[in-house]
Amino acid sequence: MKKEETVEILDKVLEFSQSKGLFDCGIIVVGLSGGPDSVALLHILKGLRNCSDIGCDIYALHCNHHLRPGVCDEEAELVRQLCCENHVELKVLDFDCREFAKLNRISEETAGRVLRYEAFEQYAQALEKATGKTVRIAIAHHKDDISETMMMNLFRGSGLEGLVNPKPLSGRIIRPLLCLKKNELIGYLDALGVEYAVDQTNLTTEGTRNTWRNDIFPKIAETYGDPSVPLTRTYKLLESDLDFISSSAKEAYEAGCRNISGYPVLTVSGLKDMHTAIRSRVIRSLWLETFGNLTDFEESNLNDCFGLIEGNMGGEMLLDMPFGRKAYRFGDIFAFGTSDKIRDLACKIAEDMGFMTATGPVEIGIEAESCDGNATKIPNSAYILKTRIIENVREVEYNNHSWFCPIEALAGGKITLGNCGGTGSALRMKKAGSKGSKELNRLMTDLKIPESARAQILFVKKDGDILWLPGFGHGIGFTNAVSYERYTASGQGGATSGAFVRITVERQ
Picture 1 (cartoon, rainbow, N blue to C red):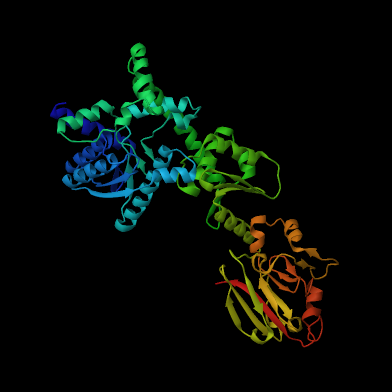
Picture 2: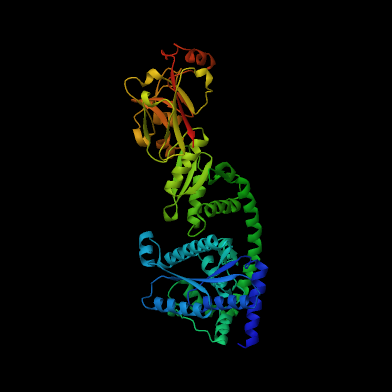
């Protein structure tokens, strides 16, 4: 390759990247393996930076997976020298891919990809926090990767997203080299005399991608010529269709997604009304917003979600998803999360229903001698318990977060603010004015409280009886306006002393 041809390479990458908005950022971090593709990417970006064609700062990140003893360390050293020569700040991370693959029951290749992309995102976030600049991650996929990935995904039964992959821009990931073929990158490096590592396993037919690259494509070329030409043309046609469908799905997601105390959720009824092509993308969008990436969210997981949505079921339902994550349905609510996050979401749903929750066990004794003006932080929650002796209850406005307890109810012991996580579940409640009592868990079922939140619901009890369940009612007290007048009148309604303890649970 002649010198003027290397300039043409730079121009080609610049034109392609600007048309896709790839360089609209302050920092580009190059995923630098040491192989020819990533080394060419680093040199091309540095060349554009040196010519002032782009204003982005260039960084590099190298992940040592330690899968090839000795060789991986040599590649890491080559990368260090390359970055030193080009005055590029480098971060090197070491991973035990084999152990990670074993623990998560995935292939070593998948383990490497997961760890690598998590590292990219964490480093990008750290740089953004340190510099205040927008960060994008540059990956060295090229035009030949389009052909290989399309065919691999086609034979896996992929949809449009799999066939239009890799994309120039995906989240913060950019691929500036999709306009170039592999031989152009090699020619560019050879013309500059740049050293790079060669992974000998890429020259074999070991692995699916290598089989396509080194065996199947050469055979296709014998009859049809370079397969990348028609495949690239098909890629562009499908890309246009995908853009339209994705735009429609984005509108549907933005219209249908709502936020419950920081948790994005969708309505089951809304999902049922969507065309399957839109629904599948809306569900993927929810996964992306919840976890930050679509890594390993596969067709089988999507089909499981369809089943969860389409079923006519009551109560809660959880389905296992990749990496210990869950798909969650409660009534008309559909969401994703880890087990802890799902429980927290269930608590937020319960709080939207008017109940109060703590994320862990609670047991706080309330005693007559310490009730006057006392305030206590409720552990594992955003609430404070306040108690105050009231002699003229008419001066205090009643609300759903307060309860007037006759001071006589504290005689002979104490009452307790708690939840089933702290005080046990063998409890019953008889609402004031009703004829019979009901076991607490049965009551919560009738109230349609999410099962995952029930152990966290706060209440006041004495012995085995619930005296007050905020959001539902009290066991001792008035039932209507008439009984309120009678109950709060001095010497009547059970408060023989005319004094009450006002118990309030409020946010900090």
